[in-house]
Amino acid sequence: MIRAENLTKRYDGILALDGLTFEVHEGELLALLGPNGAGKTTTLRLLLGLISPTSGRIWIAGEPMTPGSHGLRRRIGYLPETPGFWERLPAWKNLEIYARLYGVPAPRSRVMALLEQFGLADRAHDPVATFSRGMRQRLALARALIHDPPILLLDEPTAGLDPEAALEVRERLRALKGQGRTILLCTHDLEEAERLGDRVAILRTRLLALDTPDRLRAQRFGVVVAIELDGDPEPYLPRVQGQPGVIQAALRNGRLEIQVTDLRAVTPNLVRSLVEAGAPILSVTPVKASLEELYLQIIREGRGPGESG
Ligand SMILES: Nc1ncnc2c1ncn2[C@@H]1O[C@H](COP(=O)(O)OP(=O)(O)O)[C@@H](O)[C@H]1O
Ligand SMILES: [Mg+2]
Image (cartoon, rainbow, N blue to C red; front, side, top):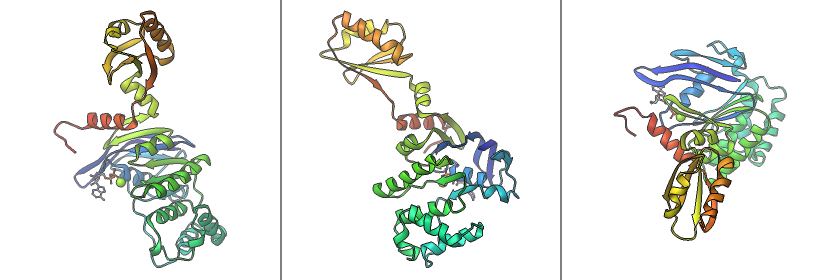
């Protein structure tokens, strides 16, 4: 649905994006992660055709995006990093202006339906200046949807919101995903990325990783099972290390932490062997690295020599 090929963007001397190639499939939500200055906003602006790449190509729904692709832009809804409104105009009027810009049929009723959907109907006639951050963000989402686009580019929609307001926005994102829309979501919230994202991309000028969180974990950390014993686990370590399917085993947090090739295939034999040796097993738990651990490791590896922060 969205395809970028070898996208590079330089601003004056600054290399903001270097050879980015990726795809967002139809109906997929791809979470785009990366530190400040990683090139996330630049990527969205390129996909939208607001700026042109220094080199590289973009396809939206199979069509090449070029500076004159106004038709293509209509298929995309955009939530900018800092959405601007006509502050003194009422919320409904802000949306109606966009509805008319996009030539939406029956703009007034479309606007009211969206305000209803986003929990803003009772504030429709209040100026946007009186809105809280959470309300503004929901209004910005409603605006991105005014022309019912199949593709959404969302730039940190939950940034700076309190937990409750963030949750409300997140629930609406989940609903949008449920409607089969194709969504590229920039976020700093790793839990949000994991919960909502079908796949996650980690960007730092270059694309450092792109896959499902589980596959990224498996590639980086393998599969780890922790076995807790009643007493000192150390005497059992050599036995565990000799088992088929065990990549490595160590004592950590008072438990045996065992990296295995495959949880299902290896764990039962491992447990059987320990029981045969008389090990008093209290618990057997698969260990999942957090997306945060994964993210930090990938970002650190992606940092070139001499770079910091
Ligand atoms: N209009 C611009 N002019 C010059 N440099 C810019 C401009 N926009 C972004 N940059 C630079 O490009 C890099 C990527 O920025 P950006 O895409 O905003 O990153 P992110 O959204 O991931 O924080 C940063 O180094 C930023 O300073
Ligand atoms: Mg940004």
